[in-house]
Amino acid sequence: MGHEPRPCSVAIGLGSHDLGVAEVTAELYRRGMAPLVVFTGATSRTTRERMPRGEAEHYRERAVELGVPNEAILVESRARNTGENIRFSRALLEERGVSVSSVLLVSKPYEERRAHATARKLWPDVEFVSASAPMTMAAYIDSIGDARLVVDMLVGALQRLLVYPAQGFMVSQDVPQDVQEAYERLCVQGFTSRLIPGAAQAE
Image (cartoon, rainbow, N blue to C red; front, side, top):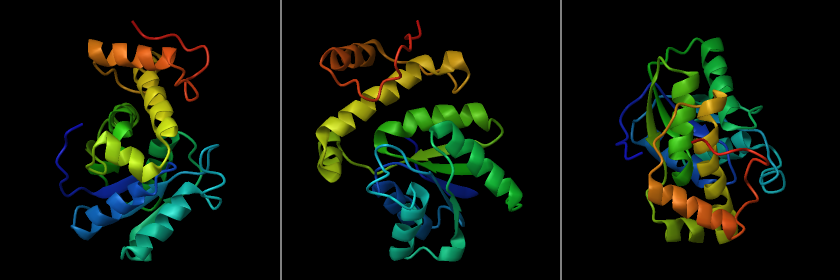
């Protein structure tokens, strides 16, 4: 999204297979960008073996290792998709009486746009600032150690940008023609394991 991190009411780290999201969130906390952190995420087919206690809990443990006080972290352990990440985090913060006007939304680099579009749809009265690890595609793949997984998930994220607005799950995003064509080439090449079966593309 090209956002510059700035101080916000809270930082929300979106659960995934990438523990780097917790590390970026911890760094932003240490820089004074948010006084409170929410980690959100249950488990998925990608994370149930590597994060058996749940994504949010493993994120919390990593952030504490990196110096974030445990009392500055809230854990939301039920969410299984991006929409639930936002809705359940919002409910948790409201339950705790936390006043929120802005959110530092921390995700995997290729999920920034999807997360931002989802958050704007589901929590429209809050300002969202997107953040992720600042690295190249090649460096990111090296950090994950599984190029196939990264490209499969990137293709799945792009498909959701195309089809979810019509389903009411996120605000509409402009997808440039060259990005659309790259997505279609990758689908033809078989990077399809994260696609929504039978989902038609938006016009």
